[in-house]
Every structure is written in C-alpha cells, then in structure tokens.
Amino acid sequence: MKNPWILIATFLGVGFSPIIPGTAGTLAAIPLYIILHYTPVIVYIIAMFVIFGLGVYSARKTDAVFGSSDNGIIVIDEVLGYLVTMAFIPFSFTTILMGFFLFRFFDIVKIQPARYFDKKVKNAYGVMLDDVAAGIYANFVLRIICIFFSC
Image (cartoon, rainbow, N blue to C red; front, side, top):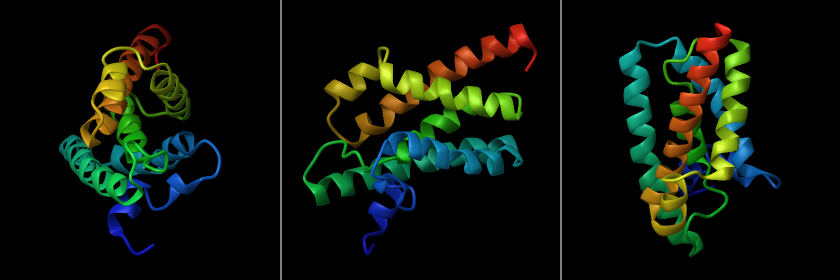
C-alpha cells in the first residue's frame, strides 16, 4: 500500500477485511485502548483529538482515491468511536467487552445526531462524527451499567 492516508483510514489495513470491516476496526481498536489506558489522561484525550484529525484528513483522501463518500474500508472512525466509548470507564475485561458491543450497537442503530452525521454530512467530518456520537451514547450507557453493577 503506497498511500499512507489509506493506511491510516483503514487502520493499518484492517478496513480491507472481507467481512464486517467496521467490526474488525472496532476489534483492532481494543489493543490501542489498552495501551492508552495506561497513559496519563491528557495523553488519552490528545490521542482522541489526533485520531479525529488524522481520520478526517485520511477519510477525505481515501474517498478521493476511491471516488466515494464514506467508503467501507475506512475504519479509523470506529477506532475513535471505541476510544470515546471507553474514555474514563473503569478498566476490566468485562467493560472492554461491554464497550465493544455497546459501541457496535449504537454505531449500527445510529440514534440522532449520529444518523444526521451519517446521512446528511456527506464528507469526512460526517464519517468521523457519527462514530463519535455513537461512542458518546455507548459511554453513557456503560457508565450507567457501571453505576448499578459496580464495574
């Protein structure tokens, strides 16, 4: 792969998965989350902003190469969405799994404003923001679960 922006947009090629690339992208985000969990909070926050910026730019470049909008191989948005889901959540194998399933649920269902970003914002910002919205919903639900079940 000669285009570094496609490499970033596909999260090192994960987006080329022949089946369920979005789910594959979310799974690939778990090791990154584990690494970032052990860094200072400010590093985690900066990483999310950097991934957002790289995601917007690489999605724009990838869509230009493939002549599409929100090409299925772009999974950097799922990576960011999962990191948003897990932000400031207690660390455990259980929360990692719950976060994965909650994020995938909200990413697929696309409750507003995620649906708006997905359907109406047909550019790289829309690609990234619908997953940020799904991550915020998943984070909120995971927090409630952790309150009631002491994660």
